[in-house]
Amino acid sequence: MFSEYRAQRLQAGRQPKTVNREQEMLGGVFSVLIDLGHYHHEHPLKEMKKVKLVDRPMGYLTQDEIGAILAKLVGDNRKVIKLCLATGARWSEAAGLRREDMLAGRVTYINTKNGKNRTVPISAALSKEVTQGINRGPLFRSMDYLQVREVIKEVAPDLPAGQAVHVFRHTFASHFMMAGGNILALQKILGHHNIQQTMTYAHFAPDYLSDAVRFNPLENPLDAA
Image 1 (cartoon, rainbow, N blue to C red):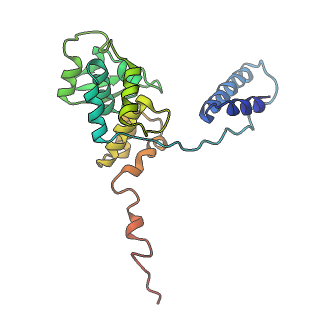
Image 2: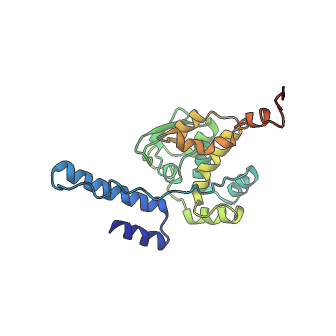
Image 3: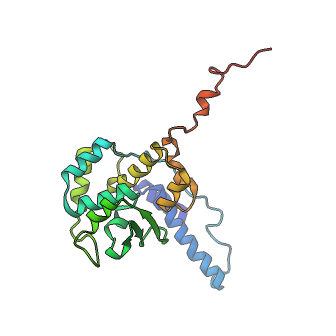
């Protein structure tokens, strides 16, 4: 029954990742029921494999596009974008910051996706800009997500569909690696649970797999003898 339901969901246009999450939640229900002794049969989803995920294209903003977006926005929208670009935060994480979350040139994100707090340093100039005039409580009270989304579409219309404000997080990570940043440091900054998630950005590193150029047979033919 669940297999048929899953097929219908996919046919209706639901993303494989969403369907897999639904399978995890339903599987979790049966796991709890079995542990509590309320379900006395084999786990019904035990042998069901999840839908295979295909890597989606991931876009990022160029320096010119970043400048164009910031030039078109003011106030809290601009400040939240700057925090996302400076720390790799998700829009919701940055937008929900309170004055108490910023101390001594560091910003601490509390309501994160994985539930774990993470702290990222920021420049003194950005800290002053974001906190000026606010001593306590929410830092941002007048964001306009739809306006920001429209500006992104206007400046970078060719970005992969479905990214919207999440492109700021991708942009931070992509530029971080292109500038020679450490992949393990990036994992901690982004708050990824495992390094596999962060490896999505590894190919942006200047020396990524550069040995392929140095040691391929065209560049280094072996002596036939």
